[in-house]
Length: 371
Image (cartoon, rainbow, N blue to C red; front, side):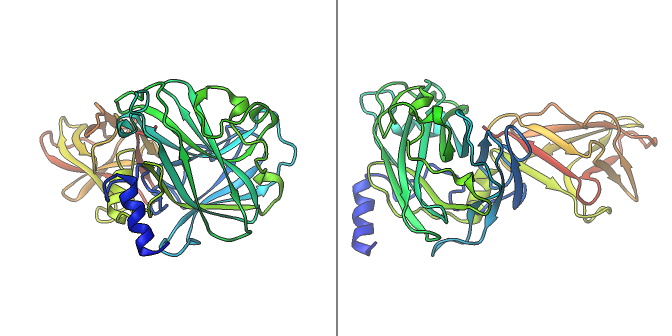
């Protein structure tokens, strides 16, 4: 795209030059959990949020794949999401599906004015590459009003980065709820069973929750051959009928946005200097520790706290350390802070200060408020 065309696109979008992109981590830079994960369906190992922040795998069927953060990316990008088939599935069940999925809070979608007479069109653009050419589907599901829409795109050339742009019509029916809950899912389909493409494809027109209309009738089956690969990056969703150049944000900016939904603390050793500190407090009694933990950023909702292993916290004070016992050691969990509350096996002096850390190398504490 020429500089003149880029400027025309920006002006034509009638949106701000910054904060245009409603997608977080669209350049696939942030992967707090892991850089690779095996996905087994249905509802098996590796579903959900496992690798790249804000993007999750949802699937049914017998296909097995690896989901990873890749350094294979188009010019101007450093990363992409990669899905590679490791166990093929050539005989799809009628209701079988496989999506790379993204979820939006309703309060972040109010600029679309959905469900009003002023409803706006919006455009989803992305870079995609695969050895499997053919037709693919991008679907939308309005969880507030049980409405769907979908459009297709075609990968024309094998193993070549291509930019795609899909504009969805305004929807004057069903407003998104203005809150922090899930209102919209964006699904990049990698296959679709017969029951998902037996009706009249939505093709940009909003309608009720009819699964038969959800997938393009010519949708490819990425799972049909071991070694099939599909990459995506530069995912952008913006108000207007014109795809503008991808809005690059700094890694630090994207990381902070991702931490609204997920934060992770991991120890790198077994001593006080290499463990991950999470809070400070006191011995409330000879065997009870109370401390305050503040998250890096305020989270979308009170998170689910997962400590692995379940005895993975330590209280440090002076030249001693005491491992916690009983429960998971965290309670009174809010969107900004949590209370650390656990007992220890060796008595200490009540009122003495302490620092709480994730205990041993590889031990983790996760705060999850994903949609």
